[in-house]
Length: 115
Image (cartoon, rainbow, N blue to C red; front, side):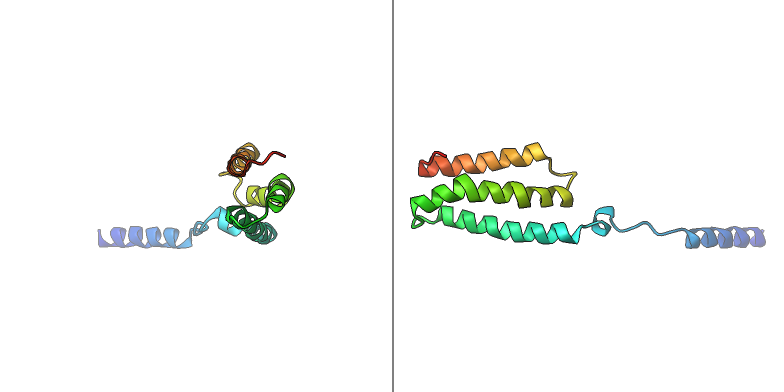
């Protein structure tokens, strides 16, 4: 009886000890370093634009240039593609474009700017 229990226990330990350990996270192993660098650089640029738009001392001509050209171009060409590569399950192109429109509309109304 003790031999059966000991043998069963030994086989159970051997089987569980030989099984492959599951990976930590599929997304952690597949993080694209180029996309991450691109995202961080673009995020810094966009934050600079937002700081200028929030600053009441920024000239209106510069605000117009940021809102009508710089911010949308940076967002669409660098920020959005990098974010979609880093988190494809969380974001869609349509959702990110909607977020861009919301932000641009807010600043355009706030500063009475038309592109």
